[in-house]
Length: 496
Image (cartoon, rainbow, N blue to C red; front, side, top):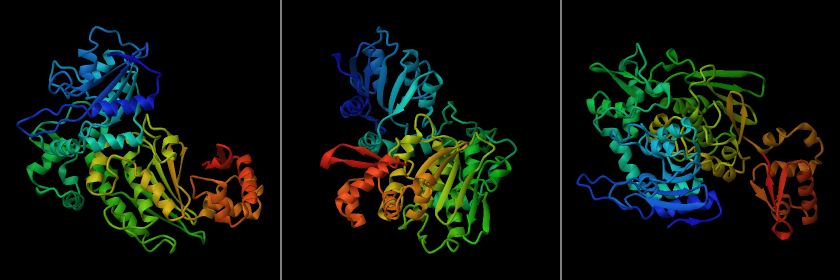
């Protein structure tokens, strides 16, 4: 039964998640899990209809049920759709069946909210890209709702990823990047045995790296391509495992620079397989950073202290999520006395925004799903995310300023501050000059916080509450803080 409500994207996302939980799991002889999927359609007149997987017929996709069974004869131009799972892309259904992304575009729906990406790394984000290429504006669900969708679908996701690795068929036809194509005049001999064996060992893959079944894994994930009776590396495979990927792709790798306090600098190019770069970076930095840098480990599964954990997250994010179509720029790691700067070519991938990145709560979406899948398997990347939450929490636990994202074309820059004074020194000189000595100390402390109230500031600075209020008022007037609320409930958000 259609209903009408005020358009509120958050409430409609929540409704899609609730509808998702009604999904009917079809019984299959092969024991394959089906996803729980919910969809909500908002028509131009405000009427709302919902559907879930298997609602009217065993195995029917939620979008198919909603568009074809419930609204087949209805004009849906200008409608909005909320779906908890990325709509399937061309190639996912056997002809003459249309994929869900095609049905949505043909229905002239112009806005789609998507919960999570397809768990198969070879088709991940291709449904989203199809929609975007056909004029559909795509928005991702809020991060907490994505976490709930993944929790409900945990068994399906785990099974789908493993099934994608071993299914005996060619990858889907839809292409996100030219790097999915085979690289001419290369062979599997261009892969590093060390990189492949590290991937096999850490990911607990049973077969030998020289075996046909291992090659089938790489083929199904789009990391190699079949040519005649043999295989050649795909661009992404060469980036991950190639002994010298820069021979073919000059934009590959990472440039490292350390600026020492005495004015000297040291540089290092990390040109080998991407999966080995974080470990090589750690070895390079281990004895070169001052004692303010922890000697923790880069690997995700081992105990590590800041800032190596932050460096790892930042370096991996840069390598995995950069735009490799920008051929004139490389990822960079720049270390100074006050900060560690990681530069990654390319803006945040649409529809993720810089503001969402800076909030450290951006929805999960991979620019290069194949790279992200492998880095997650070798425990170097947060599964399906940017590692943003851990960067924020680890910095706060260590009493360090929160990392800061900014856009300096063509780079998305992430600054990891090594001390509060360094973050404070980035404040415009005119603003700093307007601060008293005690206010400067207060501002250094505030750079480590998201928001505070006057009592927290007074306690930290060991000053009367009236003085604390005067400081916070001055900071707000200078644009350093944003005031929320009034009276005892007043909070001051730190602007970055």
